[in-house]
Amino acid sequence: MKKFREAIWYVFVGIVAIVLAYVICSQPVRAETSVEVGAGVTHYGTYNGRWFQNGAPGNKVTSNAPAFSLGLTGDIVSRGDWGVDWHAEYVNLGRAAAQCQCKTRDEDYAGHSKGPTAWFSGSGRAQGVALTLEPYAWRGGLRWGIEAGAYIYHADWNQNVYGWAVNESPKRDLSLGSHTWNVAPVLGATVGNGKWSVSYRHYFMRLNSQRSNVPPVWNDADVIEAKWRF
Image 1 (cartoon, rainbow, N blue to C red):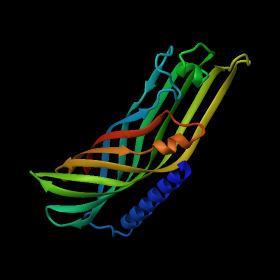
Image 2 (image 1 turned 90 degrees about the vertical axis):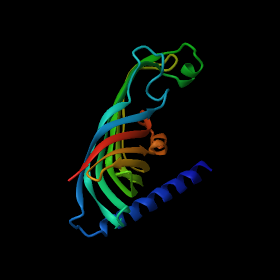
Image 3 (image 1 turned 180 degrees about the horizontal axis):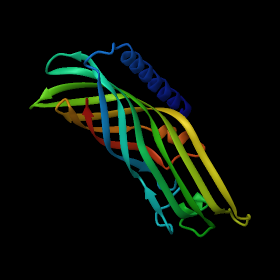
Image 4 (image 1 turned 135 degrees about the horizontal axis):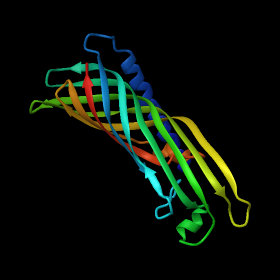
């Protein structure tokens, strides 16, 4: 059942990405096409027990990071007080990191029992291309929109473990990493005056993170940006 749900997930996201790419690429470059620049902050949703353990000595998690984006946007439909825009942009969600003197066995941490520990230190980031459609309407002098689309991204995670051992095994140092391309849905909302806007997006990266052999510290990510069109 789990593999079936994953297959449905990837078929859905793949269809969304293909449709959005076709819609955006089939639009002629016109005067209405604008450059869009954004800057803001990412909050990665981290998971306790994955590369950090709450309450462990030296525990520190960096889950907030500067985010920025750069791309193109234009209209598919424009009917005065409402319409639909497309967005194609590079999005860098920023760096996440985690460290602690963690127990080497998850069972020891979950059971609050004694056991060997090691120094865990890791960091990484997610960056890629967001393809979205944005239906919008003008109300009260402001432009209100809802975004939906796909995030085609590269996730990097580099993890070092110093003094790792289980039970009576000799201690050793480990260097692990994952560098994968993924596709995830993205949903969001915007409000602005047409030239500037405030954007909120949620990036659904949880399933991709859980499937990796060396998963990043994050699951999903929430991003708030101020954006300008030129």
